[in-house]
Image (tube, rainbow, N blue to C red; front, side, top):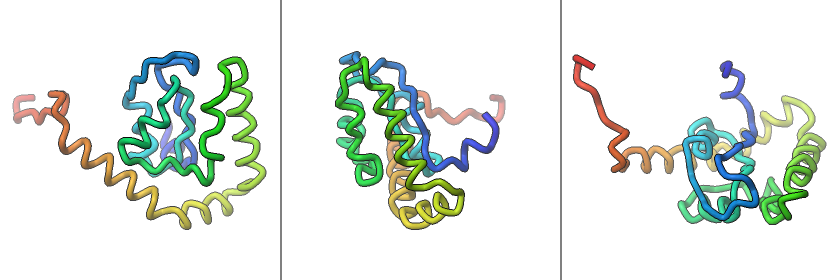
Length: 135
């Protein structure tokens, strides 16, 4: 994506699992909003937001109606997300209002970023390997 994605206030995360799927898979897609200082809107399997909350991330429930779209029947899930996006647009219709929101919640966005950094630092998966000079 272009650099514009890094300036977005919200990130609609299309996670690997569909909304009616019971398995919870947290992939890099669900973590990018925390790395990029964004508010995530998760399109994911059941229990995903609860799992992210249990990891300590602030999911901005006060701004996103407590992620109530996530409790919807799969047939209306996408409509609920569209409805949420419309509410957000109505509340923050200009770049100036979005910037004001970012300024107001910067400490929370930064706390998510720092929490993610701690998880990355403690990574035991073997993927976070430093290469020597030979590559």
